[in-house]
Image 1 (tube, helix red, strand yellow):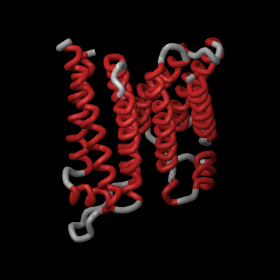
Image 2 (image 1 turned 90 degrees about the vertical axis):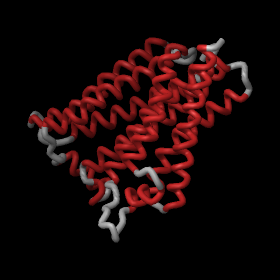
Image 3 (image 1 turned 120 degrees about the horizontal axis):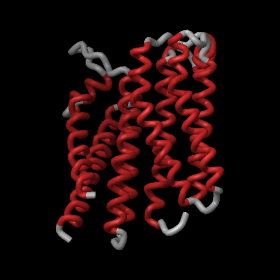
Image 4 (image 1 turned 180 degrees about the vertical axis):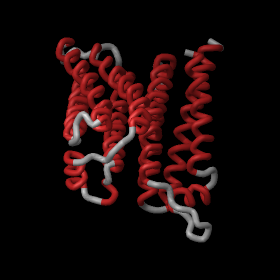
Length: 139
Length: 146
């Protein structure tokens, strides 16, 4: 269980970096990717490409969050906060890809919502992985 | 389901995630068939009569990740039926096995089209429809077992 938690911790960290490369690492580059930029001759990303990314993100999120949540529940089932942490993790993991699609079809405020859900979801996942590792290694 | 309590949460969210994956998957397929430039009925008619040509390279590019992803996803969803007390194990087994067979047919349907074994795309539409319906049935069974 320590091995899979360490692997998922690094997966979540690298997924943030990967999304930074694919969509942009700051707000200007993200909006350029999603909506294009006439002055800089940048075309907006194709819906096919974005949808494929969302499709893959949903699949990867499902498995990574399922594994983290299952181990976390097994180790911390006596804590009251466990239920809410698991709910939050799943909701953020689901909302992030969906808001990316919404942001593509609407406007910049939804980019902020996507950014928030994506970052919070990933950091929460990494935090829970660390708690699992801590519990397993330093009982 | 017996003795699970907190584990109901991941299982319930898994059902929602799978529906979202199915929806985005169908949307992607329809887009690749020209949904962007025509309405949905026109796109479906086009798939049935003359689907977009695909090379073997395109087919393998799509089929390879789907073989892994669909197989794993069906396995994970179906294994929760082992804990069900509301549906018989035999019925769950039949639905799961049928789903595996239809998923394989759905993935390989475009191979038949690419090789020219079938000219129309009815086989792809039929297998896709059956796959989605069977998967939704399995998801409902898991949901009722919670």
